[in-house]
Length: 132
Image (cartoon, rainbow, N blue to C red; front, side):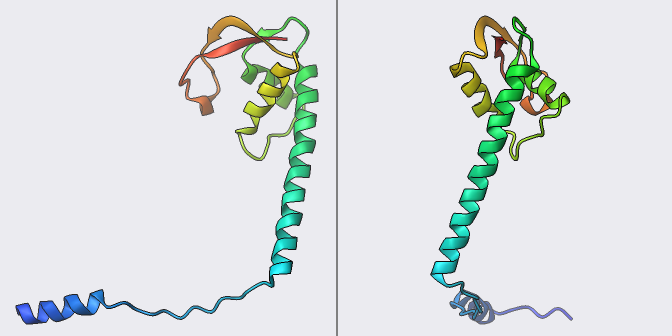
């Protein structure tokens, strides 16, 4: 049987649901010195791994394409990956590698633009064509 609630009953329910509740949570705390040490070791490991991969990626990309090669950076990246360069921990690392190689003069922008072919780029905008 359906019981209709009175306004008084609704008022009681509303007030009960609005009461602040205290929830006890048991937190395991790591001593600050150990937490800082873990943090610092993690940062050192991440930087070390990232720097090793970055240096290897720059060397392999510089060697992957012949002098005079013309194309998008993503094409040079695909060639280097086919030759054994492992993928970075995040796709965004490729932009940093591209900028570094351009600043070192390994790749030079041409006046041409082309649509990317990599599915991750979604062909969202035209990119500058590079020359090695």
